[in-house]
Length: 399
Image: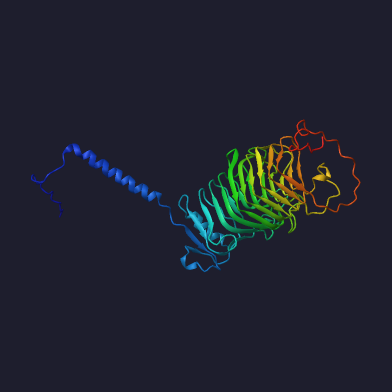
């Protein structure tokens, strides 16, 4: 049997809105609906909490780690985020034997700050920022229990291994209040790497480090680099209140370990470094390589102290004169300006009339140097403007 709903007869005595008013009623309904949808969209999603195995916050966490392969739970939380979401790491230690890769727009936040929340990486585990607009905030990272070549199970070829415990490949990254260390089996604690195999845009740009620290390492503290011969420009990078201390004191990735190296195989443009400290590092405090292009780079209120801790070399293989050893600021060529900066127990060395110093100071502590017979250095001609302006440095590279 088929049951049909009876249509209710219309009541002629019941008032009805005029036909002309119907579009207004529909429009109001649409507007109210849109406002409700916008209100829901504007409400940020609740963060996803991951608890360490030694944390007291397990009862309130969405994921609880067991102290082994903790990257599995953290990555699962990252993958479950809505766009622009946040993963909160509890206080405690997370043991990660693999890598973490946040999605675009994600935030990874340490609840306890770097003093209480720690990511301990082993077996080649890294924190890789390969998507844009990622924020990292408030935790400690430790890398190296001997990074090895996974295919041969041998120590990595250090001439080819370009990696950092925290490696930024993509633009618009923010790294706040992150501290770190690593042994000598990896290239850097904090690495900004333009690798076209990972990040296709021609320029890696708009990256900020604030309140970050690399200390007591066997490798570079902060390093910029590029992979290949194309897309090598890194642009508009900012460092605020960051420090590199005793880098190269726990072994050495190579003999040139510096606190900050802003131009290794990359070109650099629009660099801003403010209120930063480089102290007790193996080689230079703040460093650029010769061949890289440096454009619009400014240091303000930065201090380099007692760098060049390795034994004084008998000779340099790259042709540099010996007075470059352990420079506080090593600025060969390009457009680099120092404003109110100090080099204590080291020197400021620059190699271009475009490098300027304003209200800066340099004090060199006595250093025991072996008696080494060297051929006389080639003559160095001052730049045309250097003699008339004491703030402009003389050419430093042998002609």
